[in-house]
Amino acid sequence: MRNNITPLVYVITMLANNPFLIYGYKSPELFCDRQSETQSLIAALKNGRNVTLMSPRRMGKTGLIYNTFHSLKESHPEVKCFYMDIFSTNNLQEFTQLFAQTILGQLDTLSEKLLGRMTDFFKSFRPVISTDPLSGVPTVTLTSMFSAPDVTLKEIFAYIRESGRECIIAIDEFQQITEYPEKGTEALLRSFIQFVPNIRFIFSGSKRHIMSDMFSLPNRPFYQSSQKMDLDSIPCEVYYSFAQSHLEKKGVAIEKDTFAFLYGLLYGHTWYIQRTLNKIYEVGEGKISREDIMSCILSIVKEEEYTYQKQYNMLTINQRNLLKAVALEGSVKEVNGKNFLRAHNLGATSSVNRALSSLTDNEFILDTPRGYQVYDRFMAYWLIRL
Image (cartoon, rainbow, N blue to C red; front, side):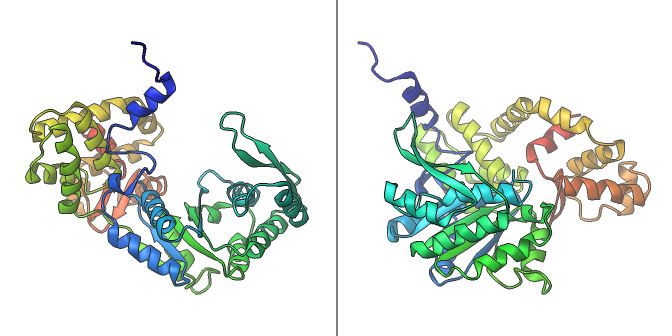
């Protein structure tokens, strides 16, 4: 009998089979733990507090935000939740355009009445209701008439305030606004945010020192304007229970000490553990050994070899030497320590410090409470094998 499933649906079904997601969010069942963090976020938002969420990239901030949104939609369906990642924006105008595209048309049922209402609000661009040709869903597209982004931002915040709808807006990689060429962007956003009582914000960022300064220094506009939350590694035992429960459904077994070995290799970094478990689920059979784990990790490293080589070639000699030395050590408390410098022939302290500053700024090396580590855990194993 001929299969009636279209190729596209078949591919999507196949892609959904692996429970260890490495991109996006699907459901609480496929999201590991973060129960206390989710409840802390919900409690803060329900009680009128904005939240500053900080952690290194790939630790699970975005998943936590979507898990929080999922819980809120079930318990408070009237609340509108929005997520926007501003990492790719380069200036205030691009931020404003993304903000408008995220919000507009989502607070009311799309209609001609809404179109007229929005047109009354916005003078900086013309919102136009159209139909998505693939899905048939009405959407709002924007005909740009930008002259001043600050004027448009004022219009958007006024539109949200006048809607009367309770909104939660998550802005990911929020530290990006400090890179905008326009002076006073922080103060401008703060001036709008503080006068819209029906919005709560989640300010999420991966550069902890920049985010911390933005919300902790008295001379910064966002000083003490939010509850701060640091996202750390998921505890090993909790992650083991999650991994075991999904692997055993496929007939794959992993013992606690074997999972602890995996967890330790990747320093508890969520995405890298998830990526490895995804590979184990794909190829694993029977009882998983430490050798199986290393085989999966090295398979992933091989897939990324071209990318790592290209990134490595762009570094200076001093940066390459320091990066490889940190990879070999795993974690380094004192980069300027005599034993470390001599063991890896790194030369003068001044050149090492310059290399370290560049590597941390460009997120090749991560400064953690345990010491300096190669940010990309898989790249670390590629470096070790050079």
